[in-house]
Image (tube, rainbow, N blue to C red; front, side, top):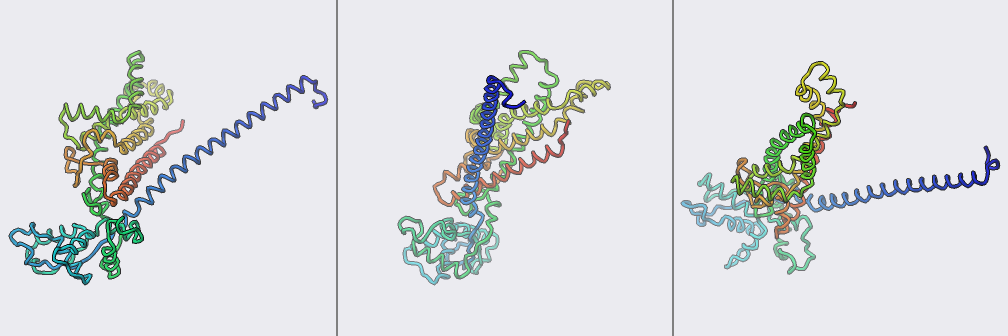
Length: 430
C-alpha cells in the first residue's frame, strides 16, 4: 500500500504514530545521555577525591633521615642514672659541630637545632646506653628522622619564599637543613616506619601499625559473630520458619535495622556492652561486638537473597530421593548459595571496616601509642586514626591523614576483590 492509496484519516493516523515513535526515540536518546552524564559526573567526583587524597598523602611514604655521630660525653651522662641525661642536647651539639656552629651561653642555638631533629635520635642513644653502659665516653652513630616540619621543607611543602614570620622554621634553620642535605648527612628513602610504627605525639614518628592490627582484631571478632549468627538466622527464616505475622514482623524489622544510622549502634554498645556488661572500653572486643550488631542485618538480607536464588528444583530433587528438610538445606541449598552468602558477608565487613561513628561512642578515640596486646586491651583502628590525625594541630599529621586513608582504601579494595573472586570461583548458573 502506498501513501497515495491511504485515506486522509489513515494518513493522519500514520503521522500521529510516527510522531509518537519519534518522541519515544528522542526520550530514549535523552535517557542514555543523562545516564552517561551521571556516570561521568560520578567518576569525576571519584577522580577528584582520589586525586586529592593521593596528592596529599603520597609524600608521607618519603622519609628524610639524618645520620650523625654523637659523642657520649661522660660529663653529661650520669652512669648511675642514665635516664636523667639530656640526649637531645647531645645530638644537637653534634649537629652544631657538623655545621661548624657553636652554641650560645643560653642554649638558644642548640634549641633551634632540636626543633629540626626528631627526639627519636635521643631515644636511640638512651637505649644504647642502657644496653651497654661502656659506650659512655665513646662516639656512636645514630640515624633517625628529622622533625616533620623539616621534612615538609625538604618535600617543598614549606617554602623559603614564605615570609619568615609565617612559617615555623626561620631562615637560619633552613640554611642548616640545606647544608646538612648537601653534606650527605640527610638522605631520603621509603618511609617504612609509617607502616611499622604505631601512633605517636610526634608526626615524624607516627605510624599505622597499631591501627592496622586493631582493625584486623576487631574485624575478626565481627566476622566470628556476625557471619555464623546471620547465616543461621537467615537460613531459619527462609527455609524453616512458618509464614505468619510474627515472621513478617521480624523480616520488616531486620530490613529496617539495616537502615539505622551507625551511631545508634554505638550508643547501644555503650549502654549494653560497656555500662552493663563491663566490657573494656576502647578494646577490639567491644568494637567487634558493636560492628557485629551493625553487620547482622546486612548479612541476613544477603544470605536470604542468596537462598532465594537457588532454584526450587534443587530442593524438590533432594526431597524426592528421601533427604530430610535439614539435609536438603545444609547439604544442597546452602552450599549452592554460599558464593552469594560470602560475597554479602565480605562486603558487610568491608562496610564495617570504614565505620567511625559507632567506635567514637565506645571510646576508641583515645590515644593508643602501641600495638594492641589482646582483644581486651586498648586499641585504635584505621578510621579512628584518620579522625584523630585530621583533628591534630601539627601540619605533619595532615599528610599522614591522607596516607592512612590510602591504607584504609587498600584494605577495602582487597576485601572487595576477595568478594568478587569468591563469587566468580563458586558461581553456579542455572
